[in-house]
Image (tube, rainbow, N blue to C red):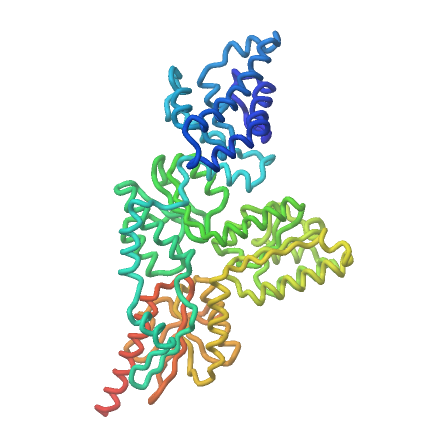
Length: 536
């Protein structure tokens, strides 16, 4: 903390503090870590001994400084409160025993609340501290929770099972992912629906609501991209942060409120604001999203610009971009090729800036910031396209700087989430069945991973209809659906006379029960058609 420019308590000599902190971090760090890692195996007195040795090191340095007459007046002002604040700056991996910390507090005029306030002030905003380190500082706060709540977990798990599981889907899994109902044959993709990260986020939100009871709970965005699940959050009393003219308004969030961060994360600036406001943060960010943040941090350390394959307005990409220093966002191969052409041949700078005006970092200059690139991606993008973009950029930088200099100018990590890839592979395999008449794909209309599932059968010449809820299937045999281009259309006479084979899948934010509801509606629609025909 001292190395990163955080101001020490004014009554302490800065050089003395620096020496003491360095001693704690270096000379005694190994001893501390051994004590921490073997905490369950070692006895309580031994753990206390490590802490005492470390404190002794600090006190020795302070005592030596007492001999310096220039610093003596300042040292005389040192209080136990100052010493406690100093010890709070030690890295979070170093932990003192409860008996040790309680003995330190004896006689201090420092309350637990003032210590908490001191720790809050240790979240740096200085540009000298990397964004990754700033995030680590936020996560060390007592008000930050990313593990959920064990005492309410059993109730939350039961609620998840009751509302989101389906016997129909379970039976299809047991029957080679096939179900026949009269003239209808449903073929279900072998990987579909809720992924682990989404399920974890929803369950943590339910756990938080049960844990905090009557406290005011907010969420910075949709918990996941599914209208039914978000309706559930609202019905539980969780408030969504309002958006005004494209900007989130946090004015309604007060100290000691609870704020949930959704599965696709939140920006660094939002987390800093919430930490400074003194709210309880429940972080449900998917670990795969955090993996992308690690990638852009690696780009920054390498002096590279992050080129992010994603949608600039998508919440996950907005969050990822907040952890990069210099970045540009490309949505398609065509946009990536435009950037590559500029790298190789130059071009109209004004046109470039206009084209990517919403998709690049502040102060971005294509003549400066495209010399060293690191590729990252929104986790829900189409993996084949991300790979193709990566190969194209690699070839571009090799052509520009030569094979021997490639590693200095280009970096790439695979950050497409496993669940996204598994669902894409499954629908690829199912689309090889050319007897399927059309695909029904269930998932939020703003769900990126679901939209990419729609593209796969469409590219193989099989119609695909993307619905966000079962109610889009209407009793009059029509369907309201979203196209690949984002248009909302209505198709009449969805189900033909006679037999029909329907491929079914769903996005990673869609519960099994919602897929079953959609199939049940199709069965009812077909029955209605049959009854009409028999009456006629």
